Length: 86
Image (cartoon, rainbow, N blue to C red; front, side, top):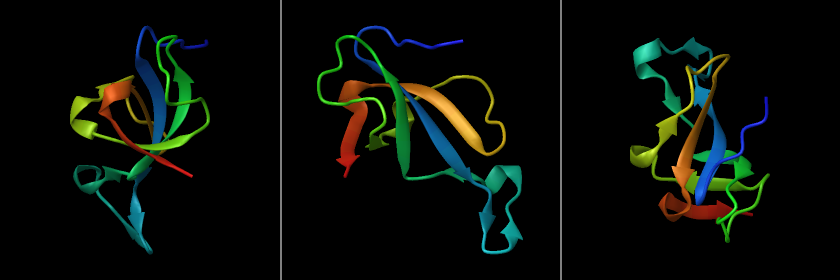
C-alpha cells in the first residue's frame, strides 16, 4: 500500500528511542528521535523532498497507526518542519 499525502502534508517515519545503553526503557519513557525521515510529500510541498532528514514540531503531528518495532509513522504540514538536516 502506497501512501500519498494531500496538499502540503509530509509523511514521515521516526525511530523510537527504546534503550539507553543497555537499559531497556518502559513504554511510558520511550521517546522519538529528534530527526525523522521523509517517506512521501504532497503535491504542494515545495521545500522538502522524499528521502530527506528533517526536524519537526511534534506537537502538530498526526500519527498513522501504532508504533511497531520501534518505528512510528505520521503526517505533518510543511510549515511545521523546523529544519532540514544535510
